[in-house]
Picture 1 (cartoon, rainbow, N blue to C red):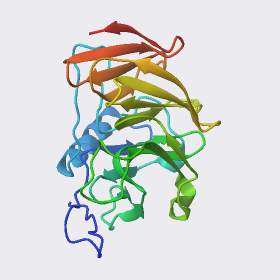
Picture 2 (picture 1 turned 180 degrees about the vertical axis):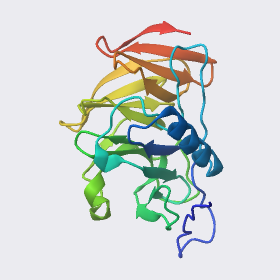
Picture 3 (picture 1 turned 90 degrees about the horizontal axis):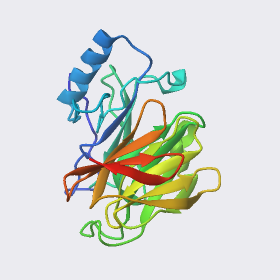
Length: 239
């Protein structure tokens, strides 16, 4: 099945769905998870299996590594980087996606399952021609239940924000800053950056270990992975 993404009526060009998806799965069997991953591949999800690590780093799809609140079951969020919007749809439904406009050029989207937040990273843009090196780097936060009401907060995080993840407790979000070679630590309750952690060159994708103690950051420009201690808030190894 092909899941339709609606083209905004007032846009004739410069719209494309970003390759980064976030899938909020229910707890599922290995066979069901495998079938779901195959479906997502067909709609453009990119799954990166890192065999050298003793867990799977999934760049585009959040794997069912822990129990997620039932309200998040089977919902997919996509960042439409050229369309200034987020698409929200359910699987296996083939209904058209709901398009939520955002004030940034959204690069990545993730969810925080405790408070029901949707986290979006991107650059604040005034024109379609602008790109990542201009404007403010923002973390835009929506309430999942009221996304049509607009964002609940916007937090400046640094230069060229790429990907975002949240911890399982819903206290902190972590944003890679490709323009600063760092990861911003955002206190979600206070709505501000409380720390910056140095990484390798041009950090991009990141994932947290299943036990929540480490974060692994892919550094694109030097071919390394930074290992960050969540407790110490510093890089403890570079692979």
